[in-house]
Length: 153
Image 1 (tube, helix red, strand yellow):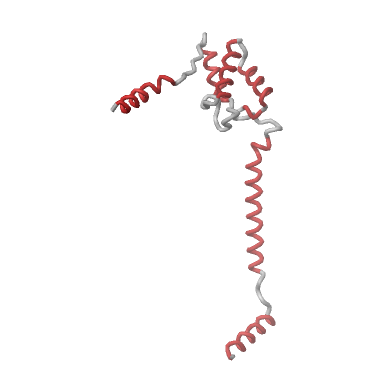
Image 2 (tube, rainbow, N blue to C red):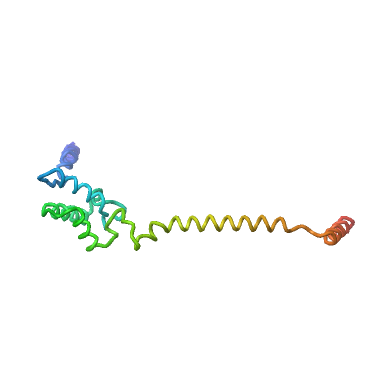
């Protein structure tokens, strides 16, 4: 009974240990910029989450860094430039279309088109090859003779 009560108290107290990040802003524009930035920056640990969605320690550090930079009156572009200079284009959750990232954006479309063209060419060649199999008169007569001899045996 005593173990049950202790377990219940432990379960009730567990949410009290939760840490909630709170970053106070002096104006709503900075808060909006903060929310926009943390939803555009990738967590470098999780890689498939933004720093807004991640609970990794690095994501927490990056959120704090964004907050501090906005408190220093840095613009959104200055924060993005700092992060990309420090961590590379990979830190952007949706990287901009540049010459360097063009292959990433256009690669799937190019490979899809190459695949469709390849399948179309192979299908056309197979269809043409199946139509060219016809025998001339002499070959047809020889085939008929062979088949008749096979039936007689």
